[in-house]
Length: 128
Image (tube, rainbow, N blue to C red; front, side, top):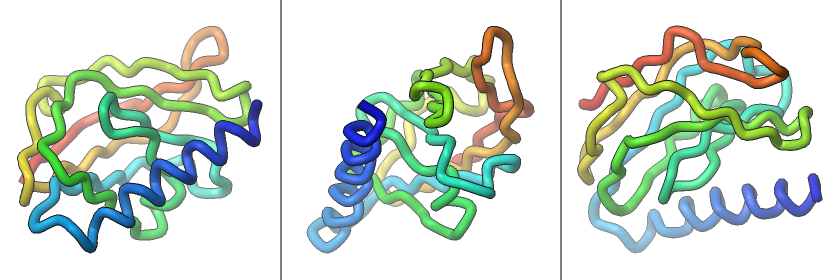
């Protein structure tokens, strides 16, 4: 199951990257979340977008999405804990739509939550 999910996540990120050659404009997602830089353990998941590697983002990856992104929910997946998906409470800065030709920068730091969950402390978003 773990390998299957890793393959699925790889396919999603590959598909997103492959679409770059065919689109005129994209909504870009930058992730600046500290505390998840030693291994590819944590993923940030957005509805209708997919799960994005926090480690890849730390290494400079910007994730282009070729349609407006509705920021209505956010989850952190921990690959070391049976891919447990932890919902994040969104601050007002993260509610809204990121139109094409705009960039959202999601920042904060990975922190342990209750009952083995993972959360992003000091979560905030900036759309430019």
